[in-house]
Image (tube, rainbow, N blue to C red; front, side, top):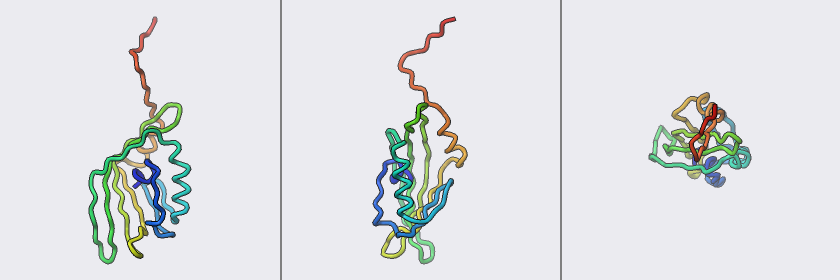
Length: 134
């Protein structure tokens, strides 16, 4: 999921079909090379990423075999105001063609607008109490 692949920056292209469909609540496109390129652009923005796998199950739907993973993912962004991105998510990986992933679809516990809104929410780290002088 975005968690393990994007947040941690780990991507093993060999498990994906060349024309794999990638989808999350904000974007959809085809091609593992494009996905790899997107990861290379995104990962440098992540600071202290973490993922906690909550569960993984095998799903059978007709002839399609899938793996469904649920997790909690969070990372600070390397922006001056250090926003925290925190989302619970689910990824479904459809398998075909010698068990390669042909479709990777993510869903989140928050709306796309809420997820993007987290980017604009500053996190202020104050190590000492603030003293106001009037």
